[in-house]
Image 1 (cartoon, rainbow, N blue to C red):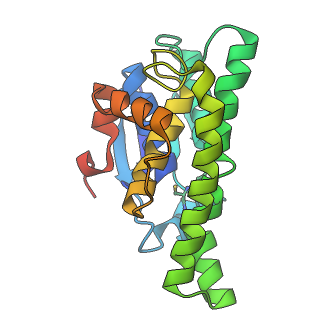
Image 2: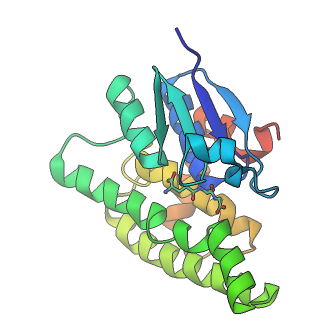
Image 3: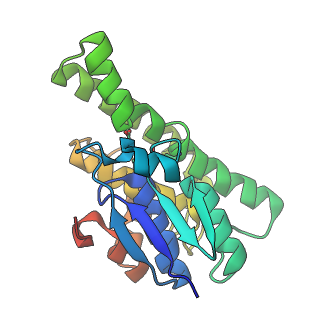
Length: 211
Ligand SMILES: N[C@@H](CCC(=O)N[C@@H](CS)C(=O)NCC(=O)O)C(=O)O
């Protein structure tokens, strides 16, 4: 059988999501590090694999998959246990809303290419760039805290990890890197703390990756 290969970057939060998902499902994989700081995602050879010039890519079962949440969905389909999503339709919609609040409404605004464009085209300096970064994280996490609180347990939804936690943990790692205070988000911190003692999450941490 062909090997499962993850093209990722240790600090990429979309890659971090897929590492968590693969670990939760117990799927072995090899990593190919694509250095975002050196611009390897723009190399013609890499863009031939992913025209978006973004990590991650997952090669699995003869498929080449992109988009971290599409990859999570694929993994959840081929290995149903443990499930990433609740069974009840309303609960699923809620968990997906939490995941998308991070993946669609926080993360893209702070992506490397967006920050670079702000600097190169609009002359934004480092201080203004950091302000931008923190603004979108704080606004997004504030809303996520409110959204998650009613149904949270040890994790963001109940007491088992879901795709919402898969998105949350890398986003909080990012927030800490940029010294964003997390005091106002007790529900998010609790889920993050639970996840940090879970082997699948711990093994996916950027500090545990070779680069
Ligand atoms: N929606 C995509 C986002 C992928 C993405 O933005 N990846 C970032 C790293 S987290 C990237 O490759 N950035 C390269 C760049 O901005 O040039 C996903 O979930 O996979």
